[in-house]
Image 1: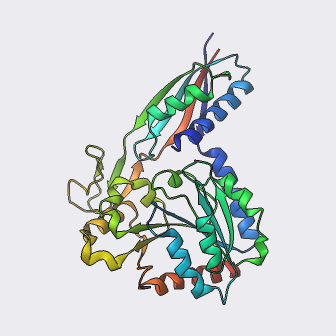
Image 2: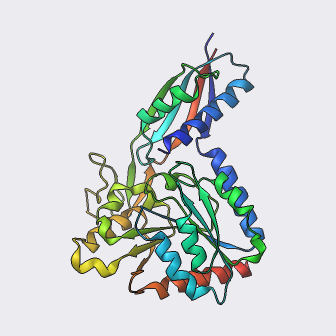
Image 3: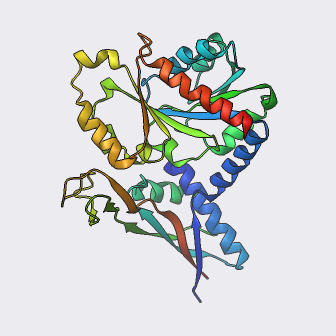
Length: 114
Length: 221
């Protein structure tokens, strides 16, 4: 459900930058979404079509770049990723002390305009 | 001709900006504030009801309650001794910084020592929307199950304190505390944890002590 407010914010950012660059139309948006950021592509796409109908974003294509979560084990120093989207202890030493290196991203990277 | 414009702007930037305005406003009033997040039924309102009687003789307390509809929670907070403001989010699954800003306008912030913000019952959305409060805390309750940190990592990652409520039900419910704590530790290694029961009152004093210390620190800073 929070995808609605997120989609509104994405549209606001895109339109602001589009207008600043005198865009007639925004054709593509490139979004970066980390695996840990709880954002569902499909719902963003669903709301996107509804809320941008009468804007310069109408019909624009959304591209999602997914960033996998990556962890750094505080005990053995090795890096590892989630398996099947599940949080798990370090596969090398079973320690549960870790830092999150990536996976929390959620930003609009760039847009294409005409 | 198509042109690519580089943006690199956080999707949450508008909300984050309003959150930092809220923070500034709360700092000016030296008002210590807590954003309470949890799933529906975990005990957000019950915790407020248990906390207020132990603080209200010493401190002036305001409560802002976010709900999709009704003022039941704000009424309960008012009954327990807080000045309560209700936010009806109109279907939205979280409070955002803008809604909090509007609610703050209804309060004379200088008059209060503690502000409790009761977020909408939800384990996903509120984690993404900063409000500008001093602390973000969450309540997990025993009947929800021991796998919640694994299923809702975003919520556990960024909170400053965790309350484990309904510990009086431990003998009756399948809940592996070690497994739960291990998940929490992975996401938030130094998280301060308060096991409590809002029914029996067990553990509430420790939590209230933590709140009091922070109210005092905020006054001095």
